[in-house]
Image (cartoon, rainbow, N blue to C red):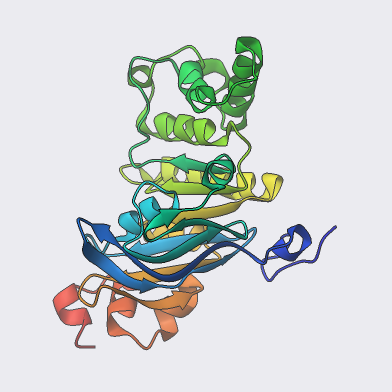
Length: 272
């Protein structure tokens, strides 16, 4: 067993890298306009790390940049110890790294015209070498992993919102990623369904020794699963503070951070 990091999970040093996700002087945004400046993330392998902040702060844009959907305006993204994207160019091995990450998009983003099993086959469309039978077996295995073994032949419209989120996670797992990115996995779910999804995320991390990076504003989920978090501020367009959620809630020197965790209205929170 490799060296252990502070979360009790295998440290990246055993695989030649300490951090699963790193950013260096990263500016993110669209059309040349940055929504966050100077993002510096260090996510250790095996952590569950949450990107959080108020609506419109740019946390989803940060995640979309981390997974290669939005190019950096400035700076560099490294995944699994290798440069993944850099402002002005893309790394030569970006495609190889991309196969080692899984992404669950906001609202699941399942294809309505495909069954859950067919949705799980989508990541294989650009990867030759697997037979249809093998792909189906992998898809059924991943659906079983998230509790949907009996629903493989149903369409997204035939299942609940919580089940759609689980199916989207199953699709993100089919390539056995080292890093799982989740965009608002608990959004729109009732408390019981959300708690079940939190348990699933923890179980997948522990069983598969994955790193999980998720966008969320759901406080109950953040405290249930996160090892560390970073708070992005909409006004300054910077990451104000990072660390364990409990420390951010109770000890952050930034009023906006404490206000977020203590549900204090923004106009009041910035004065306290």
